[in-house]
Length: 479
Image (tube, rainbow, N blue to C red):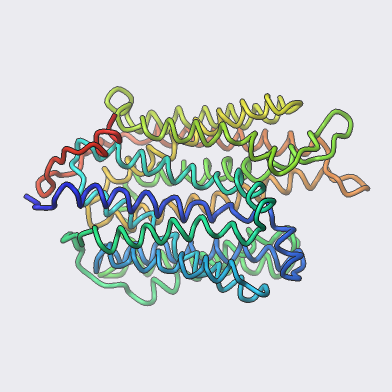
């Protein structure tokens, strides 16, 4: 039995929760103020888009690699390394004099993507099985809320203190997580045998970069351009090669047998579909709010109004995330995935059908948050129960990457649908937005199907090495 003191368990949860909020907020923090940042850094539309792409690619590569390194040599070490990148990147971004420095800063911040798989692993290491679902659900809620938080607060903060002040939030949160992690976390004794093989790591990084680059910049390059098509071909070749190498490796970076588990592949399929619906809706809902009021469409609102309309989404995401664990006693996590996907679909469809007022959009955003929160909270719980303790990092890391790929796909699909309706004056029409959100709703409905195909038995994690810890914080999480 572990001798980990209760205070260490509380500190681990607090550190991971803080770091989740820091990293998740950076995903959407710059989106509402991209034009302002571009003007200040003297960057054109293509250049400023790279501030999003650089973070996306760095996070996609760091998430599985550092997650796997945590399984091998210690999650606490890799957690501190990833969070240090977030802190340094936030400082550098706040004082960036030009686009080049900003891109370097965003790459450093992207290392923080690994905090998610590492954090789930750290929590599993110290929490008793009885309280683990509630803890993971709470952390998932914080992660989901953080992802939408940037969209809500970016406008008001930028208006009050300038866009550089936006990086103060992730900096403070990252430093807090570093201090708590360095002083209060204990390194887990759980390790997996093996090493990080160079070839699989290079191939994995290669196909992720080759796939995410055209997905992120295809609208600018042209979907039929040689560069876009060429990168998709390279991504397909590298991905196929990576899978073959992993299958033959004695020490695979990602165990393909694990990826074939019903609980894993069905949850990953749901992740890519919900990621597409969710991130596309987050990106384009504010555009409806800020669109000029022409022909009864568009609210002609400010970024602050868009953030206010999306506030119900954050509230419902947070609320449902904290109850997903206790709810599992009567509603299994697989069922939560199905229901959450369908509720998300209703929210996205609500935007398509009812968008004449801020109240209508706020209700739709609330539904989207409710469904997204349920899916986000139940997903890691399904994964953690399906894999060994020494596989948590790579399993949750790959799921996070798959959701990221889904988000890039969804944003691209939404953009294509909206862009197809652009008039001679250069403004998209109402029909374009309606088409985009109807497609998003269809994707969310599709996400409800894979969990129904998972007939595997949910296995509770072992508690042989973890004491039951009684504390006010854990009581609050489990409540």
